[in-house]
Amino acid sequence: MFLLKYLLTSFAVANAFMSTPSQKTLTPSRTFGSQIEQRISQVRKHATRASTSLAMKYTLVLVRHGESTWNKANLFTGWADVPLSEKGVEEATAGGKLLAEEGFTFDVAYTSTLKRAIKTLWIILEEMDLMYIPIVNTWRLNERHYGALQGLNKQETVDKYGKEQVLIWRRSYDIPPPELEKDNEHYPGKDPRYADVAEEDLPLAESLKLTEDRFMVDWEKTLVPEIKSGKKILIAAHGNTLRALVKHLDGISEDDITGLNIPTGIPLVYELDEDLQPIPHSDAIAPLSGRYLGNQEEVKARIGAVVAQTK
Amino acid sequence: MTSITSKTSELPFANLLKACMAPAAEGPYTLVLIRHGESEWNVENKFTGWYDCPLSPKGVEEVIQAGKLLKEEGIKPDVAYTSLLQRAIKTLNHVQEETGTMWIPVTRAWQLNERHYGGLTGLDKVKTVEKHGEEQVLIWRRSYDIPPPPATADSPYHPANDPKYANLNFPEEFTETLKTTLDRVLPYYESKIVPDLKDGKVVVIAAHGNSLRALVKHLDGIDEETIPNLNIPTGVPLIYQLDGNMNVIPSEQAIAPLRGHYLGDQDEVRARIEGVANQTKK
Image (cartoon, rainbow over the protein chains, first blue to last red):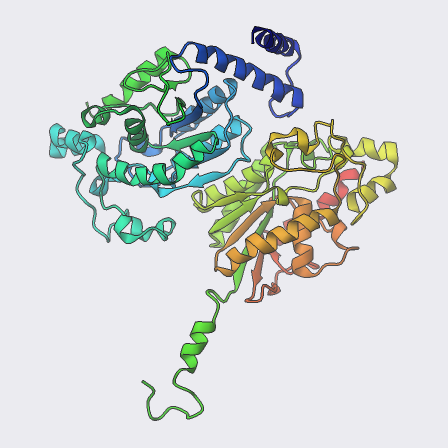
C-alpha cells in the first residue's frame, strides 16, 4: 500500500516538473497525471474523515447561479427569466476555474429552464473543458416562484407592506407570497417552455416548502438513480432549490433552512456515502456538511452578504 | 350531423377518417443548419478534424450575428443537435442565447463531429502543400473517399486518448473521408433528427463543414463529384423547409446546388462561399 502510494507520489512529482501544455490541448499524459494528483489528494482527505475507506463514495457539486440583472436591481425574480449581470458572469467564470484547478470532472449536468442558471453552467463547463457532457434542463430545479411579487423592488415592497410581512414572505418556510393571476405575464402557462408541464403543477406562487416538494420529485426519480449509477453530477441552480436539496442532505430544520444563505457562484461540494449520506468535510461551514471551494474567509463574508438585501 | 343538402358521394365519416389517419404535423418542417464560426485553428490554417479548438473572437461575433438573424427571421428552435466539439457547441450556445431558447433540449453527438483528419490533424495546410504537393493535399481535402494518412493509437489526436469518447471504440488506425463521415451522419439524422422534425419541432443543427456537407448531399441530392468542393460558409444560418415526406421544398433564394437558403446579405454570402476555397493558396 505504501509502495503504491510512493510510486504514485513520485509519478505526480515527475509530472509536475514537465512543462504544462496550454489548457486547451488534451494530451494523454497531462490528463493522466492530473487524475493521479486528484486521486492522491482525495486519498489524503479521505484519511482524515471518519468513514471507512471501503465506503462507496459519490461526489455531487452544487452551484448557485451568479448575480442576475434583477438581483442587482434588488427585484424579486422567481421564474422571471432574466440574464446574469456582468458580475454574475465573472462569478461563474471564477467558480469554473476553481473546479478546474481542483481537478473536478463531471459526466452530466443538471440545471433549470432559467437562463441565469443555464449560462452559469455553460461558463463553468467551458472553464473545465467539459462542454461536451450532456445537460438536462428541468423546471423542477427552477427558483421558487415569487407569485405576484415577481418584478417588484424588495425595498419598495418593505416600505409598502412592512419589514415583517416581507420577511415572512421571503423567509417563512411554508407561507407563500400572494398568488399571481393567470392573465399575468409571469404566469408559466403562457410560456412555451412549460408546455409539457401539467397545469396543476404550474405554480401561481410558492413557499420554500412547495419548492422543496416539487424539486424532491426530481431528486428521487432522476438524480438519486443517476448518482448511484456512478455518474459525477454538477447541479447549477437557484437559492431556494439548493436550500431544498441541502435541507434534505443535511437534515436541516424548517426554521434553520429559511435563514440559510448560499452564496452565488461558489461551488459547493458534497461527498456522499453509499446511502447518499453526506460525509462531513473538515472545511464545512455548519449547518452544511459540504464544503465551498475557494478562499474560506471570502466564502464566510459572502454568506453574510445575502442577508443585507432588505435591511 | 350531415345536413340533407350534402353530396351523397361524401360519407359522413370521411373527414373523420382522414383526420385520424393524418400525421401529427403535416409540415412544412423547418430545419436550420449552421456551420460553426471561425475557429482558432481556421485562423492558424491547420487541419482541425476532431481537435477541440475554440472559436476565434471573430467566430464568436459571426455566430452572435447568426443568432440575431434567426431571431429577426422569427425562427425559434424547439430542439437542437450539435457535435462533441466546443466550436460547434459554443456556436449553438450563442444561437440559443440570441433566440431566447437557452432552455431547449440539446443533444451532443459524436456522429455530428467534423470529419476526422487522421494523421494530418494539427498540420499546417500550406506547409502540407509544400511537402506533399498541391494535388495530393487537394485529394486528401476534397476527394469523396480517399482517406488521409491515419492517426495511430499513440497519437494525441486519436479518439482513444480523449475522455469525450471514453465509451466508444474506434479502429487503432483512424481517419475519415467525406464518405465515411456521411456513413455516420445520415443514419443519425434519420433515426434521431427526422422524428423530431415529423413531430413539428423546429430543429437546429450546429455542426461542421463536412458533417453538414453530408447532410446537404442527402437533402439536395448532390453527387459525389460536386459535394467535396461545396463550400458552406461559417456562421451563416442555412434554412431548409421540408414537406410531409421529408423532401426539400426548394427555396426561391437558394444558391445552387443547394435548395435551402442562407440568411443575411446574399452578396456577402456569395463572397463568403468563395472565401473558403482559398485556404491552400498562398
